[in-house]
Image (tube, rainbow, N blue to C red; front, side, top):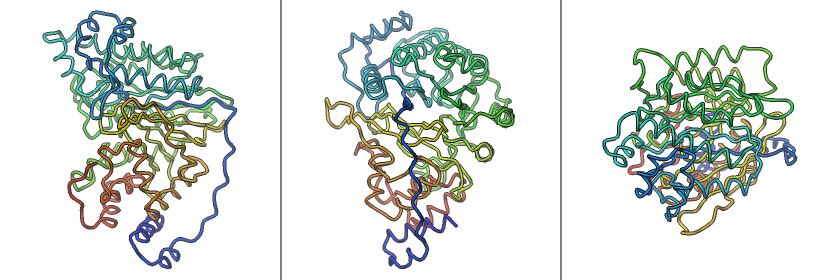
Length: 470
């Protein structure tokens, strides 16, 4: 089985004789290389902006009084530089990021923002910035923050098809507390509607997103594809409906909607799936706990994986992790769907800010992508090219067979794993993956089931490492 093959690949890296590994891993023919999509406009992939409008306290009063359309001029008064490690995105980092994106992809066909628009602890930060404010004033400030981000993104890329999804910090009620039917969703839909419904490609966006945060949109191109944008917060293991109806089951309703949507005809030429939280293990939390910690409720994750396998989207895009990674969304045997984890703009986890410029073929295949980073360890350094996926890993494309082959090589080639670990943190050496803990991360790329993930880690790391940096 594939799992056995990958385990033996790791054993080779740990010191087994080469003949043992060679006997277990017959030579595989290299995949045919996909023709480059140079003639097609690239796609821009961004995640976890975590915008913090409170980073410069001197501006708090003016921001509270001004409409969202006036915020850009207010932020221009600040002399602060881009955010430091372990903080969220301030106005300087946001503007620096947008300028770098425009320089690398001035006219993208598609801009994907994979959730978490708002800073961490947004309610608490507002309460400190505007003491004594009413709940209505707080909600209005949240709405203005979202409207400001829509204005900034739309101004940067006025012709792009935008695809957005909510993150666990996005809402009035705090972390993992999204409420279906919340006015927040309606105001978010109003702000981003003109960007998502470009040329009428998402006519149901305002209605559907306002109801529960998920929707479908047509993708530009001929033939036209489709994105299915999902709200994974309802499936999170940490979800609680703090402001809605605790007895409701929005996650179950969404899965029913997804199953029905996938059976509709005529089917699109291809599909992409988009959501914030991946269905696999929370690798960092699992490492800290010493046992598997799932991102999603197990039943919801199993159903989502099954529906993903049935639909066979060309790609599944996630955020939430803040680091550059991938996973094969499937049963653990390597037969699933390629999943791309987009790194964050926010450096709150010690990572460097990063975004992706992707080449996508007419068939919806992610043929290659480039990652750009802002190296915060070098004060005043500009945004810089970090790596392209094909060149760094020798892959033909970002497809399932390429990821499975890469997974085996990561186990068997320590130097390649070190490269992956550096890219995982977008080049930052702050809070990097500790050398002895890598199986917690590696096993999660193919194993979404808790038991299988735990068994994989136990097989590769029988003695648990203590005190990880990440």
